[in-house]
Image (cartoon, rainbow, N blue to C red):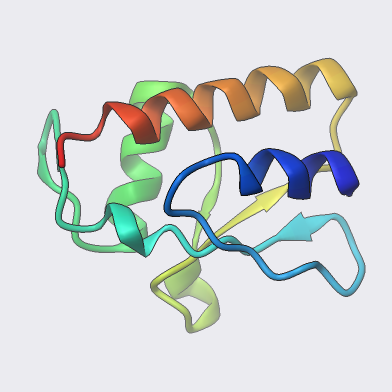
Amino acid sequence: CRYVMDRLAQIPGVACPHPDGAFYVFPDCSSYYGRKGPRGVIQSSLELTDYLMEEAHLAVVPGSAFGEDRCIRLSYALAQTDLEQGFDRLAKALQALAG
């Protein structure tokens, strides 16, 4: 969990409360809303998760499914190398969104 929190803290504009258990985090990525991706302006967690799937090959769940559209839900129940690659792709994909 420490690795996950450290990596999220390194991504500009992402805020994440420490998880209370399980193996999921719920980072607020809404600072990326209003930015333009290949298919247009991202305005919701669903649009952001679609973008992350298509551009970074990351399977994350929109926060709107849990009543919080500012967030995405991601699991960290993965091998360390998979986590490292996933967070590299997440950071790169978010950075690529035009401001």
